[in-house]
Amino acid sequence: MPLGWLRWHYRSKHESLIAFSNHQFYGNKLVTFPGANSKDPRLGIEFKYIADGIYDRSGRRDNPREAEEIVKLVSEHFFRHPDRSLGVVAFSIAQMTAIQDRIEKLMRERPELQSYFREDRLEGFFIKNLENVQGDERDVMIFSVGYGKDASGKLDMRMFGPLTRAGGERRLNVAVTRAREKVILVSSIRAADLDLSSTRALGVLALHRYLDYAERGAEALYLKSHEAGEFESPLEREVAAEIRSLGYEVVPQVGYSGFRIDLGVIDPAEPGRYLLGVECDGATYHSAYTARDRDRLRQEILEKFGWRIHRVWSPDWVMRRDKEVERLRKAIDNALSSKGNSAGNRTHNEEKGEFATVTKKEPDPINNEIHYPWVSSYKVWRPKKMPFLQPKMDGVELDRMLNEIVDVEGPIHIELATRRLANTLGFQKVGSRIMKAVNASIRILLKEGKLKKFNKFLWPSKDDFSLMVRQPIPEEKDSCRTIKFVALEEIELAVRNLIRSAFSISEDDGVKQVARIFGFYHTGANIHDRIKEIMKQMISRGDLVLKGDRLSLP
Image 1 (cartoon, one colour):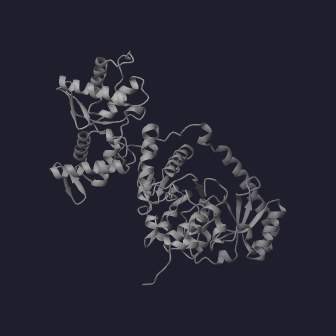
Image 2 (cartoon, helix red, strand yellow):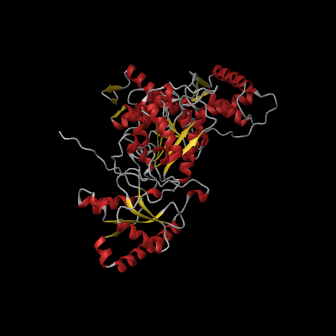
Image 3 (cartoon, one colour):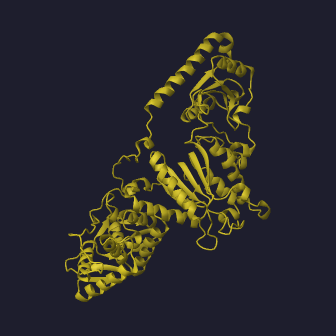
């Protein structure tokens, strides 16, 4: 069978997003399209160097400082650009887990942000590692290299995980081409920090080049800059001269790949932006294999990338030059006026000083936006009267409050119940004193039969108590529990009810749906593993049946 290349690349709305891979992996064979605004901060590649990032080489094998920066960038993204899809890629599983943990903490602290983190296969937010990001694409991609110097300042060249294995360079290539509009590369190391004499891994060599490219731009690939482009024909030179006589700067051969725009008219107010692209019937035009490519498809793609295209035909230029110059002048004037209108209508969320409201979609059963009848809202205990306690804690008052907490919020983890009491009593943190007092109250209430204790959870002892599956209220911060604070029995009940509602469900979908019921719109490693382990226990007891990858009730 004959082999052929799929050469046209039109995912990247800024040519810098694909230029590295085109140069490094595809021999510049890809046909890529330049964007109309090369200096737009919302497009292209941004390099963020974390000077104080330290790789925990002998411990968790992650980079906490980088993970914190990633969460900050994610929060800023949803503040400024809530309409643009976002993905995060870590170069190791350990770094992915570190980021997930901090994202989950952010959602607990800021429940109003949970709607931004809803998972959706095509456009939802995700956090993945380098090895499982293939096939995804998002408007913006944030990368966390994670690897770096340890606390002693040493950089171990053997630590680069999947990049050191065979095919590591291909994994990097797949990852760095996932963004449509922008890449933010967060790294605690620069290209100059890597000692290439101590490694032959192609993935590490590719990382060195990508770090250099992200920091220095096209100069690192020895590509000709836009300003270095040359005219392809006398016609282009004459049209450019007329544009300059109208008072505008013009750049010939805009772009880096085999396809280039003949002339780019620079916006005098924004030197990095092109008002107009002028196409002549020269070499680029004639090189297209079909009329459809030449006269329709390429222009459609360029217009999607923000270009206004004006065509100049050589017979018209020779025969009716004055009319063509006037037509060119009008095209530039129209481009200027349309720019003014669009700028006047543009609004920025950052000017409002608040997060944009996310439009509520119709309920989507796939994303579990339907409220199940067997799910209730989590009720948070509030003291009926504020306690007036002496410096020495009143044991009777403490017993009463703890009993109330368990009646309202039970089953409740002992640690969470202790936090409720500590906050009510004015303690900033849970110390040994409050823990000792709570444990004493638990022993008394157990002896009096006023509550029950299973594992580390306290349960009401009322005869009419019925276990419910409870989900947090977004506006109520205290109703958001970590997965650790959700009782095993409550998770099992959610699993049974969910499968009863669906008749059967795949394991992965089951884990995601159960997590979302408890308010976790992003299933990190600890959430995923806890729910999956509970499902396995239910299968081993015969409470669930697993056939293939489908779960059902017996």
